[in-house]
Amino acid sequence: MKNIIFTVILYFSVSLASAQEIVELSKKVKCSELDSVFNYFATTFKETQIWVAKTTSNTYVTLLANNDTKSWTLIEYSSAVACVLAVGQGKDSIGI
Image (cartoon, rainbow, N blue to C red; front, side):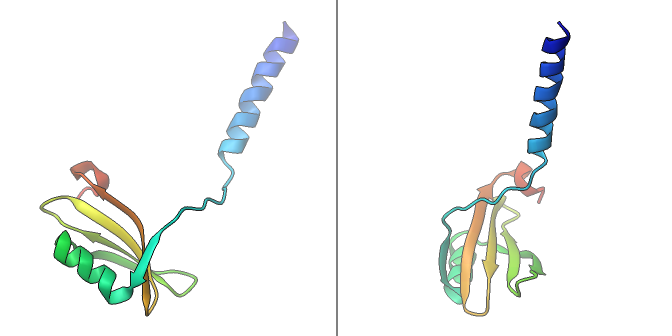
């Protein structure tokens, strides 16, 4: 019985430890010229910048949003190229 309890405790300990690891993920992102990306979301979805930050790799990350439709887009960009990291819609998505 002690072996079973020990095994269960060990299993949950290992599960919790691995849940705390930071892992590297890869996903495809769509990129284009900086002006084209910003113009597309401004024109198509009427989104405007509501937050921007400089990264440690000297790029910028910005959050575009439309307060009326609750759509949002997360973009990372340099001086020439912008990549769409994520998009979403819904009042619960970002609280705008």
